[in-house]
Length: 241
Image (tube, rainbow, N blue to C red; front, side, top):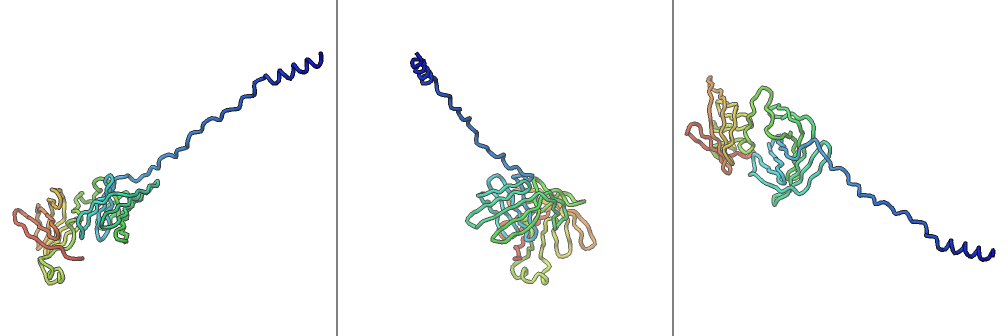
């Protein structure tokens, strides 16, 4: 009888279901939050001399300057931190790196305040400047009127006059905010884009004991600047720096 009960107990243990193995819960992949920056992804860096402008527009950097034709370079790399953005772009002419940092900046030419500091690296040389979005704030006490870098520089009648500017009274110097002739200076109060390489300006002139206001159209084609004042155009060639 005891043997039979023992065997029955063994059978009961063999027939009992094994304990369930816990199934591990799936763990989702941890995705880090996207990096955000106080610097916008569309911005313009304007450098000090030699006065380059690099505008970040979507997937392109639009580069212009006093001594160069406009270049449109496709962006190949971006770097983002909390207070800084950097864009690298390349074309057949080389590599350009544009960097903007969230920090107060003052334009060296005008003294105008900007919200960002900027640098532009071109042909192995890094030039510093300021950066802004949209239309830049005007200098203190000045209207928002800036002549684009395409038009700025020294212009004269020919290469010989460029080489010896002191001997010529026909030269013209164009800065972002002024047009300077031999005996008169015009402070620009309005700039109106008319198309590629063409603007209309209004300037307050002072010279030879007189003051007057002039509306002028400036056109750049290649290395030649044409200034038209009331239907009386004249041209000058760009002088090397």
